[in-house]
Amino acid sequence: MRRVAGDLDVFGISNLLQMLSGAGSHGLLTISKGAERKVIQFLPGAIRLMSGVRRTNPLGEILVRTGVLTTERLSELLVQQKNTGQRLGDLVVELGIMSRDTLESALREQVAEEVYELFAWTDASFEFMETMEEPPAAQQGPLAGVRLDANMMSLMIEAARRMDELERIRAVIPDERLIPTQVELPVSFDDLGLERRAVEEILPLADGTRSIDRIVEESLYPKFMVLRTLYGLSERGILKIRDQRETEGPVTVLGRRPGSMGDRPGGKILVVSELATFRAALIWFLRNEGYSMVEASGWDSKAESLCHECVSAVVLDVSMESDDALLVCERLRSTNIPFIVLSSNASRKSMSNALRSGARCVLLKPLKETLLVERLAELLKTPTAPAVRE
Image 1: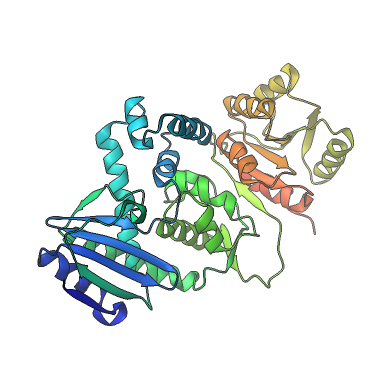
Image 2 (image 1 turned 30 degrees about the vertical axis):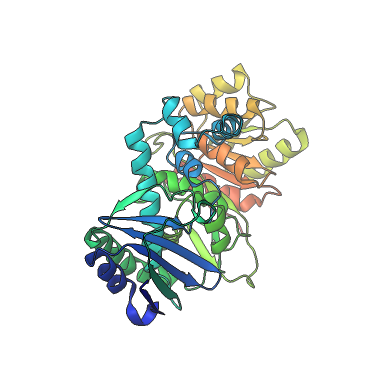
């Protein structure tokens, strides 16, 4: 049995993969970096990722990430999977949720992501054991049944492109222990030049408390996509990457833009809150900032009529955990009036509910009033938008 081992930094991951692929090797390549380890099986004409995926259910996360399933529907399927003993992939194909070809393509993409990550590993070692034997089932990860074409050229080209991009990213994110915080309001997701679904998933996690490595762990996206998205948002001034020792600032989470307001008159704001004292305080403050104000204790026919007739923006104080709040947001979105949600719940689910239901922005309570004024001015984008008073 032939064995080759060494330092990956010295030998080079590109040279190693090309050598094993070009020689038609049959065996197991183990690459280790500290506690992390990936095992790739080389077969004639193909490779398989035997282990290396840290996630317990990568297929489920792929389906949620790509919008094929909601998290609730995935939970239902996992219960059904447990009861029937079927594999999740077989189950989604059987139920017509995804075709077999689409499923296999998604899984191959996940395996490729694992291989790409190897190109960024440093201080790693490798060992290749030539063997015709299959590893025990207990040592095989959830993607072990997926085969990739062993022609490494396309993998090398994409990996090289990513490494060039990663070098630029590292200039802004030199340490994954840094903490990103949102500080600016973009015009819309469509203007960002980033994958919209990734931004919607990753941005709520940049809440000023999570480090970048924690965001990588909690996100449904591969590490490279998370870093690329955070870098892109930072370069556009939407995120600030700060050290943990810096003072935390207010947290704002941006959502999609329901429609352009550039040609509509601004200035009249509708405040919707069932808290009378809080509502009165907001109205007093915003009126002193130069806005015309109208109010409602809840979303009713009068509030909806105001939106259709004269309101430029809405400040909505609701709990996004309730179905009623989601319904209000959906009805508000149908009016094409931009709205900001105020929330005391900083959970990822609450923020995501607001964003996916059409909110332009989520501001966390206790509210910093000057931040609300800044966001309203950016939201309306009118020449006469009130300035923030010191």
